Every structure is written in C-alpha cells, then in structure tokens.
Length: 170
Image (cartoon, rainbow, N blue to C red; front, side, top):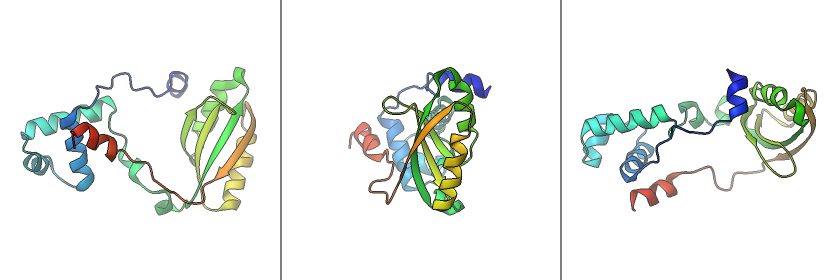
C-alpha cells in the first residue's frame, strides 16, 4: 500500500474546491477549534446540517489535514527544524522514498525539481540528534547525497487564513 501511494504521490484527486461557505466554516474553526457543529451553525447563521455535511465532505475528500499536523514539534521534544535536500539514484526511487518515509523525524517529504530530488522537513532534539539523522539518511538505499539547512527561526509560520479570508470574500 505504501509503495503504491508513494509512486502515485499524495495528490488530492477527489478534492472538491472549497467555496466561500467552506472558508467561513474553517475560519470559524480557527477562531474556536473546540466549537461544536451547532455553535458553528449559530455563529455563521447556517443550518446545522449544512455545517455538518460540509465538514464531513472536507474530511472525506482530503481538504482537511490530520489533527496531528497541528501539534508543534517542540511539544513532543523536537525543537530543532531543518530542511534536508536529498539526491537519489533514479532507479532506486521507490526504495529510497520508502526508506525516507519510514523515518519518524521526517515530518514532511516532498518530491522536487532543482538541486535534489526530495526535500525533507526534519525535526530533531538538538544538533547532535540532527547529525545522527543525516548520517542515517546517507546509509539508506538509493540515497546519493544530502544537503542540510537548519532553521534558525520561523519568520512566518505556515498559514492558510489569508487565502481562506480571500475566498470567504472578506
């Protein structure tokens, strides 16, 4: 199953584009992640069934990521963030990708163009731990070389609210 998903990538082929009402619901959830469907419906002046159906659709078709994506790495003991560019042997692409995807400290794995073939968002406990991880990477099947950049500070965290606000018509 993993091999099949890795070869196809994580494209959201079933994704129905969000509309202004979806955006309003998501912005309301950003303001109050614990809000019930009833509370959202009341705040947004929508029918409860509308809110419930839209949330179900967004969950089912992949528009909403997993709740665990909201957890900050520092909260589980991984305060160091780095980006590792990985060059792989093309004939070992699947094996290399499976090996990379199996490492828990790689929290995001992206196929890219440019200098490398994969970009890994890596979390580590400290620089010694990052060194352990990068040494492990070069021992994986199909990995030719890596290049690591340590994040010194987050200037602007990943955000979607400006896009949602635009879609919502605000």
